[in-house]
Image (cartoon, rainbow, N blue to C red; front, side):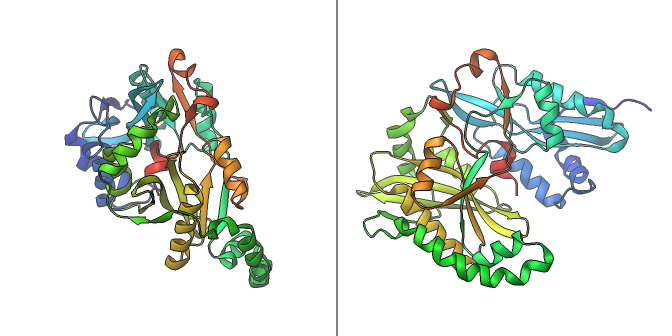
Length: 355
């Protein structure tokens, strides 16, 4: 069999690439969805400046494989760095032996920056680790959660014959959860609400707080607007907390389907630490929204151990998240990224943009 030719993605490839992905076995999404992904990843992305879009395997006029690059902006060692993320690694079965060539090209193109994969399967994670990828220095293997609909959550966790017990289980657990979450009902909490616009107040908050961590996501209004408002297919929810007539903090949630449940997963939490009750206020607003809109579950990854401790003190239960997140970089970059000086959240790569 002849070899497919590896080439960089160009704008003229988008239509054929959307057709390839829309028809790929087992991959969800129609043609318009994939064209929208490309606009989000590249044209509309403020980080897509002098960054590769990805690579294709081409046989004749047909695309037979693809690996995308999703750039984002990271404050790394105190300076703004465009980092790369792996997205949508798909190769036709007849050219599967060339899959690794796409990944190796992505690694070569990322030698001067960081390369993330935030949604690898177990098999892909094993390949990445063999190539030098390491886990993110965070506590994201754990997550805290709130059952917005206890009956639905318990039902999803029970095997078929025991599902009729979900109603009784919810009747017992719901009051206990409410008791644990009493901190969310503190009348002294600041006001939080859903927001539909991202303005200059986000720049002001970022200017006040960007030195909290040596390594963290860039949170200018442009970056937050792209994360929250640029995606017409994957719903995002933004909740903001105001204190003393200015933005004191916010949370970004991404809607996901998890084992038959509608979940709102926290992709970012950021605050001015001089405020009080910001975390609890935002969680309370998100919980009320989830209950009113019929969501089943709220989850809060532990982006660092301190956040995990605070979520526990707020009364949330915790569990293993099942998440894997790996990254690769030049040794000089990696040695500056430690758990104690970094706050890496759910905004990198597919975890922040995929459904």
